[in-house]
Image (cartoon, rainbow over all chains, first blue to last red; front, side):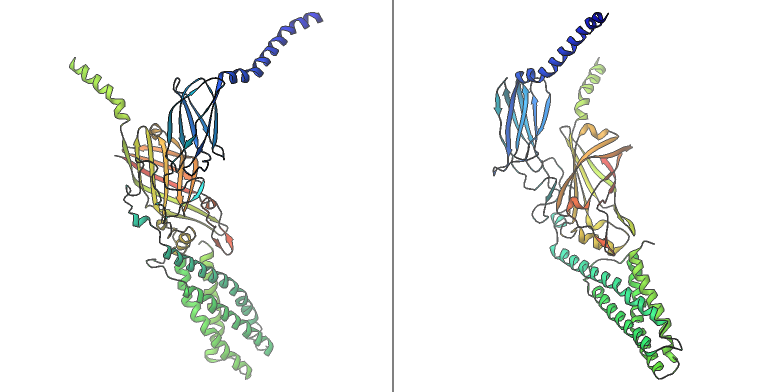
Length: 306
Length: 179
């Protein structure tokens, strides 16, 4: 019985072994029937063109085999006997085709290719300065160009001066933004200390601290405003969106930041004389609150989406 | 007999006519970029794209160009800042090139390899899927380009010292007319 089983398994083992031999010998059998087509792709300066597409198309069967050049510009095909046309393509270069290369068994055919650039830089991420090359420059004569779209060269040409103006504007507004945020700290502290400066039983020290913080706030505010006012204006720009509210609020907190310390100074003088704050000086608190509110709203108007 | 001959003649010419050179013109366009920031989510929209496609020898080449300035996010200050960070004054156009076999022009879904020139850099996006719907004489193509600021060496702008996300997907909605 055991022998029978063994006998039954023997042919099965033989089939598996045979299949294994076929599998391991197949590449070598194929290799024997194949020749090698190799070469390198370079530009006119001799620099290797990496990642160029190379397509070998059998002239007998029409079957196309693709390959991509390595970083040294080299490519390699293992091909069956026959005649092949070879196409070399790379973005930024003119496509070249070698009409026929004959590949025979166990031989190596070398086909090097020199690609002519189209006059623009290419690649995954490559610089394409607008002043040097027209954006949208076409690869082939049938490709549409910017002129086809009705875009004149002057419209596609960059303006370095305008870019410099934009850079300066952004730089100044970034400083404006940072100073504005920093101003919130002394402003908040001034508001907090106002509780100890304006009451009936206040000390000279608490009033001085409040005045000092108020002065610091005004100083910071003036610096903040300077960078917004002095930032270059871009001609032809119409103010739209939340920035309009931000700018409008400046008409409230701007005069407020002038009035508040004046009224505060008057109030401080009255307090120092032992008088109750009266007259126009009594508006110091309400004006300060409106000013601080407008300032806070101005910050929020460009910080959050409403 | 004559009728049969005429029909046969036209039948012979049909494939040739099908492969005849044709052109596409961009009729309407909406390009929308989306920016994400912890405090903000906003879109910038442009309808100013111009485009053309030329089909020849079974291959179609498309070019779309849109001025960077034309994107409107609803806030002039933000638009100027975007224009600055993308170097829009120095490189005023975004151009997109795509090549596809003419046979693919009729497909419902097209995977396009896009070559985009933006902010003085060129970047290729491979196999970007687009949906295509034919509405009478118009062909509408929609899809999203997975644009990243780093692909074009753009430093992400920041608000309150927090940078926006590097991913700025661009939703594309184009209506083409065959001429």
